Image (cartoon, rainbow, N blue to C red):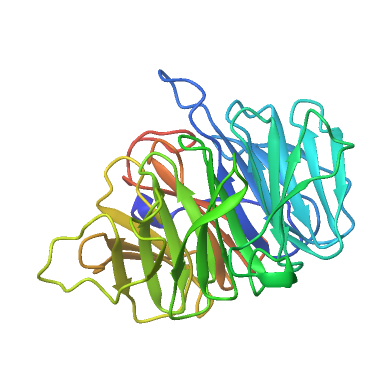
Length: 337
């Protein structure tokens, strides 16, 4: 059997895995990075670059929907259905801060230097916490046309990401909107409407690209705010047109998650709620290049490692699987074919 059909399986979770997030590279010479997983069992896990278990963050009393690492991986942030967001010491596994909310926390984003934390979810509000003053009240980011409602989105907020280069944040929600925020003024600066409800939005930091999924649409949106303050996501890029910075593709299935190769930028991976397959597509036209089965349930999340040598998938079946980008190459626990 070809090496490409033998993913590494990371067990340990007991319920569906709903989000995966790699750290950035910690060493330029050798592979060295971490992977965190969020799960409905309420126990987010930390793994090294080979997939080996490092530790489990114990303390939440409900499903954990989001887990993110700071730049040097010393801190992790989590958001949970127990109405809290927590910040953890990744070396000891201890909770450093716990922030109560009034509803489910669906997404978190910790600043690269671990000085601030963004949280959002079912309350439709984005909170900004100063981790140097954990007992202080958070700031709120309110949308421009919110009136007296004082909300960031008109629906559950699915994702919020940190733009380290521009002191900005980007969020998306069930209101079919993507919003850009200036964290210095704490004001909304730009917005983009999307035709279908947004399922996921993750940042590819090396490509400075947001990978957004909505129904059968995958959109690659520049992290930097669009030129106009209000815009709409265009239709699929025509096949005879060279893709620009904003690139939209329509696939024949519902896409739960997407991730673009962080180095080559010529392909992307997807998961789907329709089936247990992990797919690799060409970036320009969206043609299916590879399709692998290893999971035994829908695939909720996928993400490339920061060096692009492998990608991870998380599923309804409670497992994480690691796949090689170049099958047969010696890397991590894989031996050369």
